Amino acid sequence: MKRLGEIVAALESGELSLEDSLRMFEEGVALSRGAQSRLDGVERRIEELLSVDDAGNPRSQPLAER
Image 1 (cartoon, rainbow, N blue to C red):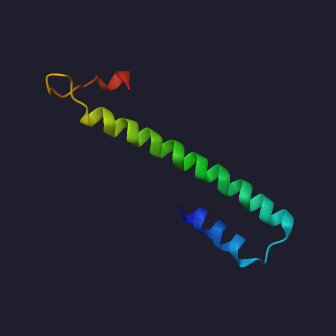
Image 2 (image 1 turned 180 degrees about the horizontal axis):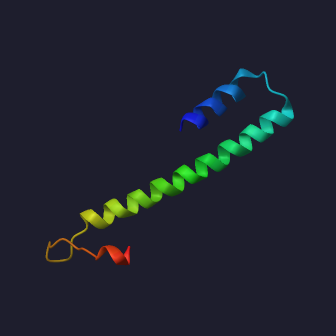
Image 3 (image 1 turned 180 degrees about the vertical axis):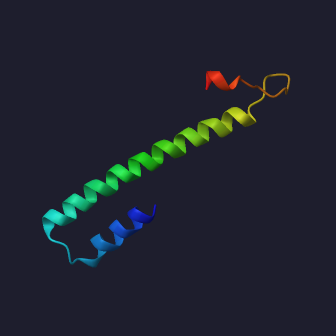
């Protein structure tokens, strides 16, 4: 997240060449996609931890299955 902030600040400054801007934009997109992927995984895990069956019992799985 820190690096994404640095990239945004650099791009917003308007002081980069077109080539440097493109390079930084590509890096930012890759970082953003990686962060989104990690967030999606955490969200799925939280949903698993909070899920219940039809009877209201918590659902669980052994750690090896995750």
